[in-house]
Image (cartoon, rainbow over all chains, first blue to last red; front, top):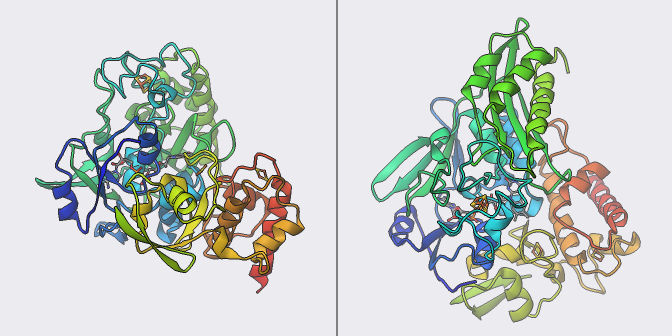
Length: 327
Length: 170
Ligand SMILES: Cc1cc2nc3c(=O)[nH]c(=O)nc-3n(C[C@H](O)[C@H](O)[C@H](O)COP(=O)(O)OP(=O)(O)OC[C@H]3O[C@@H](n4cnc5c(N)ncnc54)[C@H](O)[C@@H]3O)c2cc1C
Ligand code: SF4
Ligand code: FES
Ligand code: FES
């Protein structure tokens, strides 16, 4: 690990002041940042510890939603009684991620900003445009079974590995950020960037900006499911995951909010898929048509070709379960 | 950097490089070698300690971030002549072979039983709002962050289940 200066900020204003330089990073749980710093994949010259900031609460919002402080741990969020009752897909997604120990440290803000698990990103001996812009992408013709089939570019085919963010995307969450210039809210759908020819820039967050909270809109109701397909049944990242909020009324699908993990560089959501489902009678043929739309542009890279049929089957399984008359 | 750490009820003044992980501080600077380093990347659980009662991987956190926290390691849970209930149960149920993962397993399980008592659900809990029981399935899922290279899982689960049941009755 490279040497760095360490500053413990007492409040948000101090954290923002200290985070001026390009070489500076905030540290929250540290479970992703320190992992990458040990390998010198990331090497900030200064860390601003934000753990003493007052960003740890979960509060009801005026519109009937929840405001989740950026420092709320994944454990506390998953166990929150309101989340379990009214936004269960979020509890499910959190509980499907990492381990008990990691969830106790991982924070809401840090989870959103965790970086890809692409093997070549972690291996400084290999070319990787995300780690070292312009060096190439070893994954395209390498071991890419865990990588993306949607939203990729010739420069990068990495996935965003979070489970939590997939559920938040299905729920239509917003990210509250604060910088020297003040505070603003960004819809999660506008928060991440496609790789294009700048895969090292992953979000619209500017250097020195702090995530202060994530806002959930009022409860979406419906049946909520998080299904994660992975190489082992616990403590493994998703190959494919689906977060679903689905309601059926009078035999027809009245609501379908679907987000996907493991497929793209951001939690993936496709309005055309949802439009194709709403108003229709649930059937295997309908679910297949939804998968056709979702996967129309999907592109495998050899090792991850299997994700295309796997996504089709996982989506069908989730929609079948979500629309069954009685459970 | 100068800072203090409260470990197992004792305060220590330290002057360490900011890069020092909590695990390295415990092992190399405080002589508490019970916590083990398996992977140094959050992947094995051998370094598990409790911070303010919660289990964490001490390899993925900086020592200097823990000033004011109450840190408990395996050395703080029991002594050879005064074992904690889980330490005793691991002996009774053959919950280890080489013993390398054991301190992490026991710290993890100690905090995990409290998580069950607090009603935290897990990935295998059917009803997110119901009180959970320390079933084999629940224990296996909740302990998945602790690997055992000797694969003593049956003994580990038996030991934890016994203590979780005793505590539920108490
Ligand atoms: C072995 C292992 C298995 C895992 N498995 C899974 C899994 O199955 N599913 C899953 O979803 N995740 C998994 N994870 C990843 C884990 O969820 C993340 O490491 C964690 O959520 C990151 O949160 P943190 O608070 O520790 O972030 P940190 O490591 O502290 O920070 C991550 C990044 O976010 C920045 N940052 C943090 N907070 C803020 C803020 N408030 N404002 C601005 N910037 C900020 C930091 O500067 C850094 O760049 C796993 C991790 C490990 C090590
Ligand atoms: S897929 Fe992206 S992260 Fe992986 S090697 Fe290519 S550029 Fe790097
Ligand atoms: S040494 Fe910390 S998890 Fe392996
Ligand atoms: S007893 Fe040997 S690793 Fe668990």
